[in-house]
Length: 128
Image (cartoon, rainbow, N blue to C red; front, side):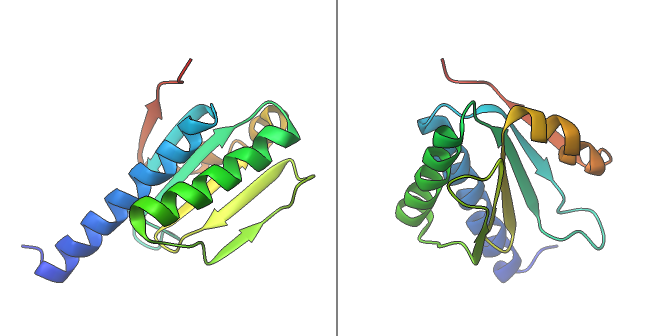
């Protein structure tokens, strides 16, 4: 049975995941995938969220949107953000959740979500 603290942490992580997905959908992120790593021993986080954008400008907008919506809805700021306005891969580390925002060719090359194929992978429908 989970302790009250574990349940509270799970609720916070779920709220964080929902806020990240909302931020990505807000700026029309494509092929959003959540990877639940919470049951894997030695995983680097509880969830990984992967998506792509069609231009460097969109990647920047996706990053800004995630930052703003997570701050507003979950009260969190990333521990770090790797990549910049001209990056083809931007990573946002929220501790329990890591967000990867790719250009399509970089995502295909690294195929990062399939490194964790033994975890639960959920595809989020694209907003049109």
